Length: 154
Image 1: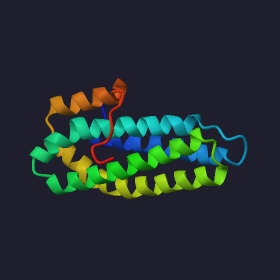
Image 2: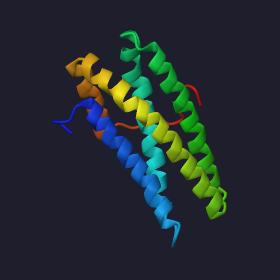
Image 3: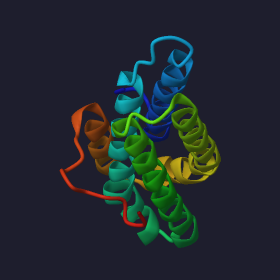
């Protein structure tokens, strides 16, 4: 990701997360494989952590309070939706319930990403200095979410 802007790198991560959920949904027609879904959920939790801990604070300091507030609220919704999907998987719920929960999560992600990408990521590429962008890109390459961390509005 060396040549990518931070915004583009984060958008790619959005597509990877969506793709994992979609791959799981596609597997429901046969032998359901929860591995892509579990990877997507872990990736989304890490993505939210990165944004809330590293990306949003400097953007908030630069005056983007309103948009960041909306993103934080939506992160809470996403977090609770992921918790619900994971609870259904753990309970070996019927396929229809899991499908509905995953479809709902994808709808939340679509609404969230359609605002975050053109507003937050564009501003991040313009406002963050090179060191901050490099730190975030490095985290994307191998950073992990601390055990027990939860989105601020969850």
